[in-house]
Amino acid sequence: MSIDPVPTPPRHDKRLYLLALGSLTAVQMLSTIAFNAGPVLAPAAAADLGVQPDDVAYFVSIVYVVSIGTAMAGGAMSLRLGPIRLSQLAMLVSAAGCAALAAGSLWLAILAAMLIGLGGGPMTAASSQILAHVTPPRLSNITFSIKQSGVPLAFALAGALIPPLVTIWGWQAASWAIAVLCVVTALAIEPLRPLYDTSRDSRLPLVPSLARILEPLGMAWRDPVLRPLCLAGMCFSSLQATIVGFTLLYAGADLGMDYVTAGILLAVATSAGMVGRVLWGAVADVVRRPLGTLALLGAIMTAGSFAFALAEPGWPRWLLYGVAAILGGTAIGWNGVFISECARRAPPGRAGEFVGATSFFVFVGPVLWPLIYRGLLYVTHAYPVGFVVLAVATGLSTLAILRLIGRGER
Image (cartoon, rainbow, N blue to C red; front, side, top):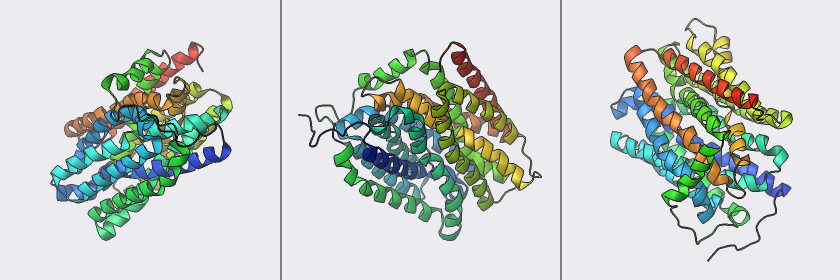
């Protein structure tokens, strides 16, 4: 029997729109802090875990491998549970992952990566299900971009606050603190359930079938615009994961920065990403050219990646911060426009499923690329090589988007 205790909220109600936007942005931020606990804590935690700091690549890949499945299932699960209830459960699972990481055991760290991926995967699909229902079409790009700005804001806060916290209290206390924040967030959004979980259907299975999960993926792949766009998203997300996962290590090993200063460099890049997500979403809505906006982003990413690869310890700090800001503002700023375009092309009422399906490609990049990057580091012992490879990949992606524009797509 379908559970529908109160009427479905009217589409484009201003109060419901603003409340959803603010609360979902906050939830996205806390979820992302948990999702990236491993890379930020890696320089301090590696010795206690008996691994090298560069081995964080394996942790990141495990997180993203698990995230692929839960991201694709997230849309269908949100229809069964309600997007707010699904978000609460996801936050609690992420909290369990951070607690497992704090135990200081290598085997529990592997379990932590799996739990964090399990919790982080469905968040975008769940929030997209709500936003697609309450957002006015003219504000689609800026809305999804503002919500996704919680991701780089979380990166910035993690880069600026966690290293000093680790210095004072230790990395395990920092991981416990993240776990507690996740639990508090899950409890705090309980009052939103009567507003946004009104169309859940108890007749649907709790765990969707493989066919149900793969159906929107096939639809997205057959779309002549989304197919090349998703491949571009795979390259863009690889660069984003590299900035988040390896900037601290790159700055310490090749640019001569200490742990706290390297954290500031990461905070600069991710803060610029937060501003960039909102800015690029606004640009896409104003010019009504989301594909053109993504092509411009790809071109700037390509140039910024080459510049970051050429950085030297002797460069003035303002120049390093400037390059990091340009690269972060684009490589972390593209996501909202991309998600909005995927949601716009979804069948009516299935935005969450469609966004979850296209997230497969967004997550595949960070699954494969850290392992490839780790192999490059093993052979070359040089972090810049990875940025050069990604510069080429984002350049080719930009050309693919320009071909779509050349065929008359917008």
